[in-house]
Length: 174
Image (cartoon, rainbow, N blue to C red; front, top):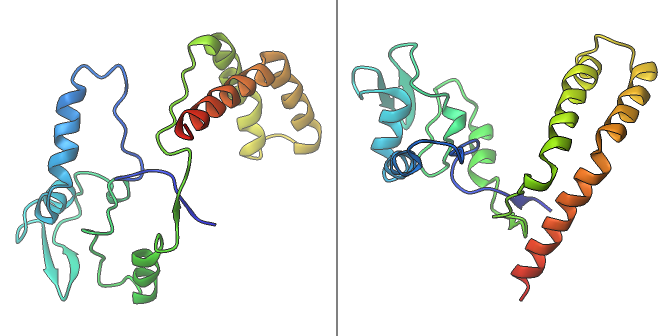
């Protein structure tokens, strides 16, 4: 099955360390409050930076204020004239049969495993990334990287994630 795992845009988040999270949330609320706001935030001023022709967006300048995929919203999304209609139809019906994931709203608290998380990230950057990008031989380096992840504490980290996920799901089922 296809699951809905997030609401709103695709990569919108407000860091917990943001100095003004309320202001950031106000901007997101403003952005999604109307198609006019949505288009202005992404493309600029209608008639100057973009026009809408036959239900398609025609950019008049090459500048974008934000990458549109960051804020994608099927209620407001417009497509360029060169985008095939079959793609648009798929996009607009993508979630029609999707179900909301039970994990929607889960937030992992890394407080108990911060040191392990740092060690895992170091292994990922130094050993896994070169494998991912094809800079080193997979067959010889992957087992070494897995061993390094084990030594870094990935099993304990995964266990903590699983524990919190189980607690989250149990709290939803009460």
